[in-house]
Length: 166
Image (cartoon, rainbow, N blue to C red; front, top):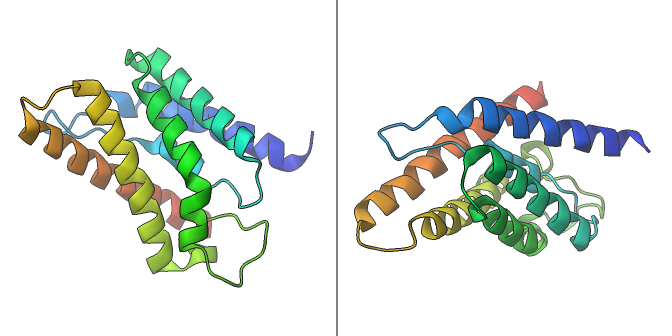
């Protein structure tokens, strides 16, 4: 087992514990919950096999579902963003970047990484809250939940990016 695998497993466990023990209990204005575990999918490198990305994403979502009592919602949402991440990575990555590029603010630049993370977090929140509510009777609450959770998640992701940079 190489050092990158150990780092990936450590990141997986830390994000899972942070979400399960702390972030799942934050519900600002009864609608906004931060989803920090999406950060794991944001940082899969370019040449990672798609099956491993899907497997790690689904496993993270499944374990979050176990701790959050959201049967299958996080697993389905994480599996979907794990599926589209390589395509979004190619869309936002610099053209002359290496094959083993790990997405971050440092490697992408501020603007590209912001749009990349915004897109993934928005798609995740959209799918998550659509599956969770499964109706559109209270569509205003649905929109507030998506936007509020997206803002909180992006703020946490950028806080971690700033800590990693230093």
